[in-house]
Image 1 (cartoon, rainbow, N blue to C red):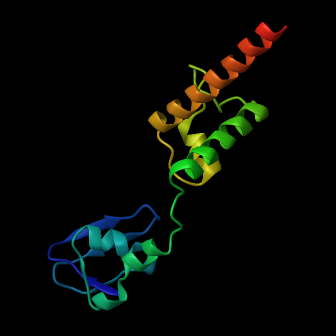
Image 2 (image 1 turned 90 degrees about the horizontal axis):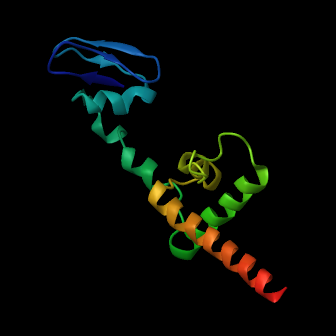
Image 3 (image 1 turned 90 degrees about the vertical axis):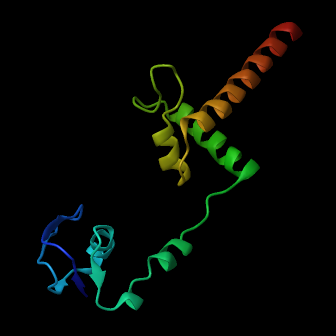
Length: 134
C-alpha cells in the first residue's frame, strides 16, 4: 500500500526496512511496516485496509485472579526444579522476564515478589510444623 507523508523523511524500521518518503509523494510501504509508517504520521491511500485493532482483539487475554496466581506459582516451582543459572536474581527471586516467558503473559516484579513471598512463608511454616511434630 502507498503512504504519503507531509515532509521528507527516511523511516528505518525494526524489521530492517529503510523507506524514503518525499513530501507529498505516494511511497510504497510493505505491510510489515504499515504500523511504523502510521506512527510517524504517514497517511495511507486506503485507510480502510489498516485495521490494527482487529489484530489486537484476536490476542488471547491473560488469566486473571486465582488462575493468574496459580500459573505464576506453578512456573516458579518449575524454575526451582530446573535450577538453571540465570533463572533467579541475586536476591534469590525468580526473574520476572523468565516467568513471563513461561506463563505467556507479562509478570511484573511486584506481582512476582508477592507470590514468591507466599511460597517462602508456606515452606517455612511446613518446616516449622515438621520440627515441632518430631
